[in-house]
Length: 285
Image 1 (tube, one colour):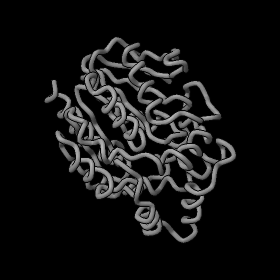
Image 2 (spheres, helix red, strand yellow; image 1 turned 90 degrees about the vertical axis):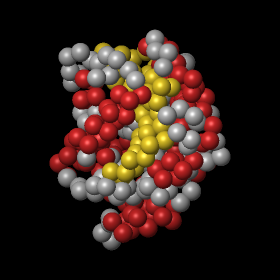
Image 3 (cartoon, one colour; image 1 turned 30 degrees about the vertical axis):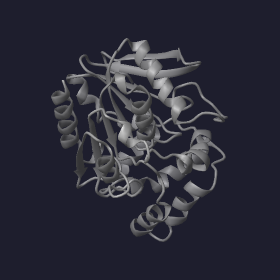
Image 4 (cartoon, helix red, strand yellow; image 1 turned 120 degrees about the vertical axis):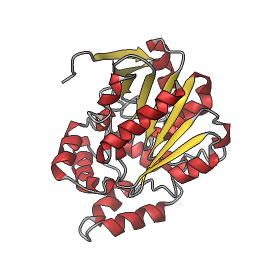
């Protein structure tokens, strides 16, 4: 259900149909979800309070969630998704935005900053990494945090393609505990049940995009003020491989590590996250 004041739309942009909705006024904050194969609902309702002081722009990437569904992602990558975001910015009539990219949405956000930096007032990179070049560390983290009977599901998720959206959802629910420092099954069920999955997008990213993506040699070209956020207990994009590398390579950054969070600090340390992001954006303005 969309709350009063939300503007919900599906619009044709950049030769595809994108689902988005907005709320609030002031500095526009565009939100890029992770995945791929997931959607924007992982942000809600936790980021909604920011709409009290800025305009939030939630949307689903091309081929994901409630945007036009795709089964073939050939030729689509972070540059395509970055172009879509800029066309959405133009459609909404904004000259400058603040951009928040979470997880692999951070890959798209970095590409956007490289291609369209003149349209950014600020960049927020949340629990992401400049390159997924540490598979052994990721799997060691999963093994450390999993029961023996759980680890095969983690391995399957990142080594075998899904055959249906339902299979992806079922397995995602089995490994979702990894994404939190303090796991709450009822909360996790609420999140995973709201997602509109696309296993084709996930399969494409795991088999092709994740291993090929790297911004390491280009980060110095991103000159926009950047807030880099990490979760101390993030198993898949831990601070040493993610936030700390970004902070070291980007010219104008503030680094914040949420000590009591995994991959989703906007949920686990909600009040502090809202305060941190809102205060940083206020200083930009």
